[in-house]
Amino acid sequence: MIASGNVPSSSLELHSNLHNNIAYHFISQLQNFIAEMGCVESKLVATIKYRRVEKDLDKKVAEALKERTKSKKKTFRSVNSITMGLPRFKEGLRNIRDVFDQYDEDSNGTIDNEELRNCLNKLQVQMSEEEIDNIHRYCDIDNRKGIQFPEFVVFLCLMYLLFGSDVTYRVSEFESARLNYVFDELIDAFLFFDKDGNGKMKRKDVTQRMNEATHQERTPSHITSQLFKEMDLNRNGHVNLKEFLLSIIRWAGIETDDDEARNETSP
Image (cartoon, rainbow, N blue to C red; front, side):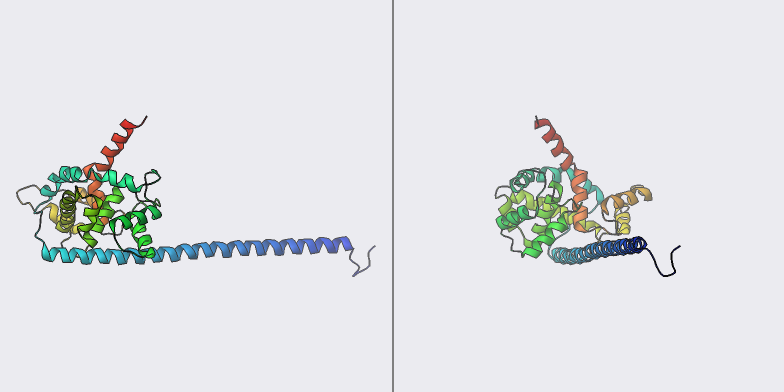
């Protein structure tokens, strides 16, 4: 029989090991929790920063659009006139593919951050490193960490709006006049729907514009709702210029035709 207070050393070691294991497990879980919270905090900070950048760039675009409305007559007076212009948009933007391929140096179908820097240098657009990072992320609309061809068209159109016709001249001396014409029409098409002129197209704007032609039957609400939903890519209740441009490019079939052509020429 073991006397009271005389605990075998093996039991003490067992108790000590158990205590150490529990302590180690607790500390390990705590460290993992802190690390996870750090990742969450980091992602949250990055998200907040990106939203601020997005808001700032939207504001710059909106200001440029307002200046444009002061100095330029309206191109479109009906939705039908925009719809009829889709083949013209498509034809005018066709040759941008060669420009995209030129800057897609590794031919992987996207323009990364470094390739965009080279592009901006060629276009002689002066931006800081941070501004280049911001515009790259702003135009990476589907968040695939690279600007694809339709997004590149959006990028060029935004550069044209913000920095003028010198951009398109440096893109292609021979195609600059055509690009200017098409970009002007694309921007004016957005302004046709942006009735408040604040760079944010709302669902009611689409509904009103779709039904302004009084001699035609009223467009069903589910059609205008679906049209707006297709344009509102981030589901925030309004459509900015870049979302509108990407939608027009998709509806014009520029990306689809380009993919088909590439499939035909591939071995």
